[in-house]
Amino acid sequence: MPLFPSPNTMKNAASVKRILQRCTTLHLVDAAKTVLFYYILLKYVVRTLRHVKARGVTTSMKEVHSWISRVRHKQLAARNN
Image (tube, rainbow, N blue to C red; front, side, top):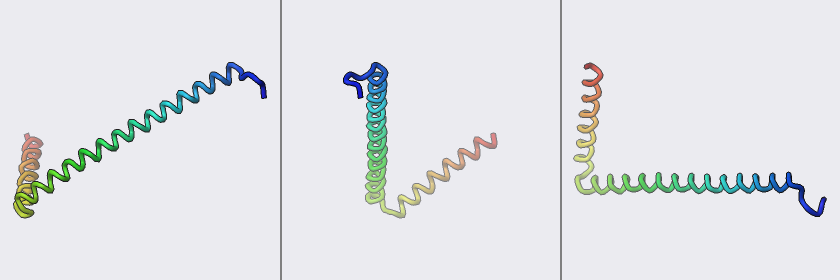
């Protein structure tokens, strides 16, 4: 093995270093996206549980049913026009 690395070896080492830095950055971005997704999901779950606790299960189910019916009715009306 030579005492001093060749320029090609140094170039390859630099490109490997850049690739590793990019992979680390991509991993951090993916981790941040995952954390954000779970935060939003948890926020909606807590909001839904508070709503059900305040209004009751039966009333909440009736509200969900009426909301789905209204949305579906609008979709069917838009499709027929």
